[in-house]
Image (cartoon, rainbow, N blue to C red; front, side, top):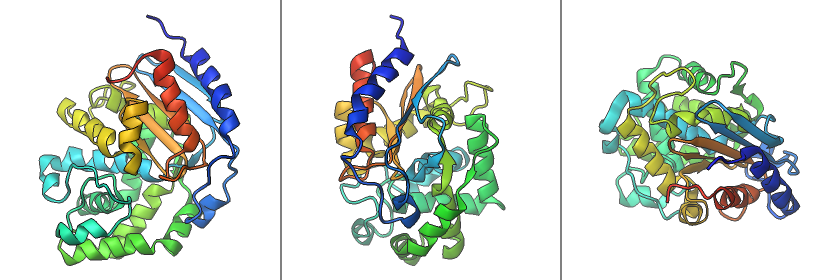
Length: 306
């Protein structure tokens, strides 16, 4: 069945736009608190090269925790299954920046998509890279096909000035020997990766390798093995939307990753990737409109992994 993706996302855009004003922008990062909340973008990228967009799909925004997928993919490619000695693969059941489980589990984060796990990923990257920020930029620029992607230094500085919880997580894991590099370097890199500015179009294209068995469909570069891509998608399905991962699986039925900048990216293996961005968040820290838009997308098209 041929699906008219453009008509579909145009319809979804019209249906969810009235929900603007019902959420709250991320207030704990001062720069993000100033973002115009009345923005909404949707982009779909198919593996055969078609791109569809609606609304503010070309507007760059702070991708925040979506960046965890990029850095984890970089180190998963480099380290393989040795990573599982330093992080788990289970949903956390606690807040994405919780210290509680680390005490009971000897400094081993539950999964790579909570903050503690992402800090370990960043630490792993520092261990193999002389210029990790340059490597992160090169990686996402290549995936997105956009050489203009960059860090938002104002956001990175704002995170540095208020990132006490992340500093605590890093120091706590250092005490267990699960952070190998200097805390200051790990945090500097982490705050910058979270401050990547990308659009819905950029992100939908950049996640296409996870819809394509680990291979970038636009230049045939193998980013991950088929097995590794399957595992990243599984982690996104179970852990990608904080404590709302189960709800997202129930409603949307796609592996996805969210960020407190208001973006959610999801993939349908062998077919497409989709990104929705709206800065207002629900109580779980996920885009309120993004959650609804992606539920409508799989309902209207009849496609999901289930």
